Length: 359
Image (tube, rainbow, N blue to C red; front, top):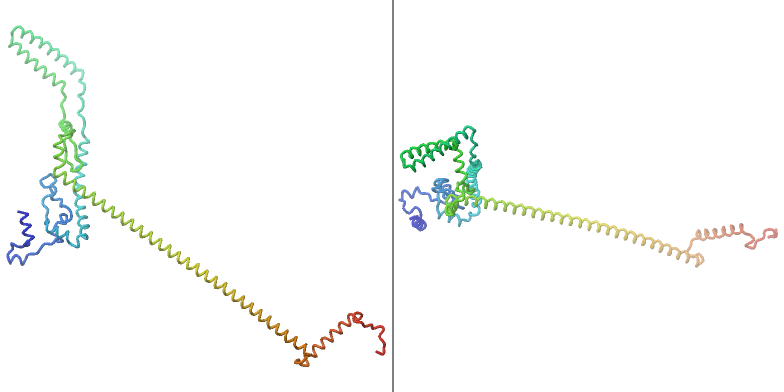
């Protein structure tokens, strides 16, 4: 019936049986409405796992609809909502497991308190004496019973046997110690084991069929699904966090390399600029030296031209020179001759002492 109803809902819509008046107030349910079970949409609803078990959570108060689940899986917003729904489901499952683990701890403590039955304490001297007397009486009576039986006195033998039974009961009461009810209970629980998955008590060394029945039971399977989901969710979350951390480290490393590359580029540019300035300075110095050499050569050429002009003036007998220059040059020559003559008269062929006064 449910499958046929779902097929009709898919073909004709869930409002196919509503009247016109009911249709006016009808609101179509969508997968992202609050009335829809998000746990059922993304994975499983824990309310469906423990039906008719000791851990029964009761019916879910939200809508479970396969058609809405398919609509959710086809929705373009599916990936955005999966993380949100899974986080909510994990939180709910962790509360279930936390409550279960408390029960498991209590059961484990209960089993840990088990003790072996205490050995019977030794009988006191008085009870030992009473026991010896009773055993002696029983022995004598049994001998009498045997003699009477051989003599054919059955009634007397039976009477003595009743006395023997009473003495045996008295003997048992002396040797048997009273057991505490709690000790008996713990002795019985000593044979119990605890399932760590679902917290159920099991009979230790039970038959394989009963153990298999427990393992495939609804409660064990349900808590197994819950625990597996929590482990899977946390592992995926941790892996994602690790991937994000590695991505951040890789990005930081790339930024560091980029900064080093830029710094190296700036340093290279600075070296190029320094080299360019040095080259410019060297070129400026070379130009300055070249200009200095040019000026020096120009001054040398000027001196050479001046000498040439001076040489042409002495060759043409002083033509082209003014009288002041000739006079100055002649006067200088005369003065030189006078100085030469005054310093070395003999060398120049003058003898002042033989000179005639007429001269």
